[in-house]
Image (cartoon, rainbow, N blue to C red; front, side, top):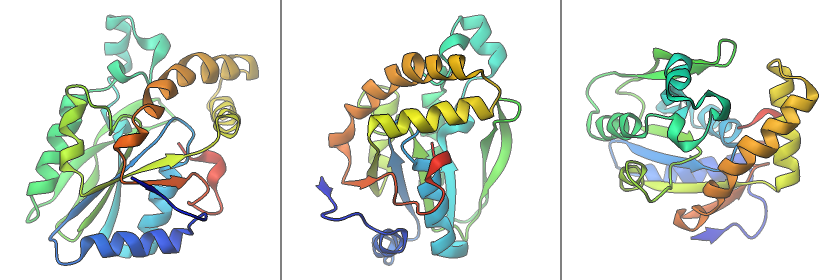
Length: 221
């Protein structure tokens, strides 16, 4: 694993991704990191710079439905590792990694209703670069351990905890929580998840700062 000696630009990171592609038919680049680190923002910035060959694929589409979380008694810590379908996500990535001649449809996530949306992301044959972003991509326990071997490379997006907390409180407030409830969730739920995620940093090939998405880092996940 390496850390960039100086903060890289999104353009420099996009060049690095293009170098990974080379003559491969398709690559999967993992962007891991804690809640609020800037993964989503970086994935979007890279997709813009890499053009029509690239598509961003967030892990968030594999949140369990709210009704399922209610039944399991896990809704009050949504976002924890056991509130996702990790095996389903790994199976989708395996299909994407080996299927290049047909479109594969993946679920997205609608924050306005706080639910996954089936089949809302199309991974088409022209998408030779799939930017996979999510919290738990590097967790070494099953079923998450199936993901790392599928990734051509994995980067860990790192942001100081105080900045991540600020972003998370802002995000939770924008999505309807009171400032007090947003702060409590960021500390108690997101904070507990971050402790697990930060421990997976050593499994990444490269550590990049959460500012690398350039311009709109305040909303990155």
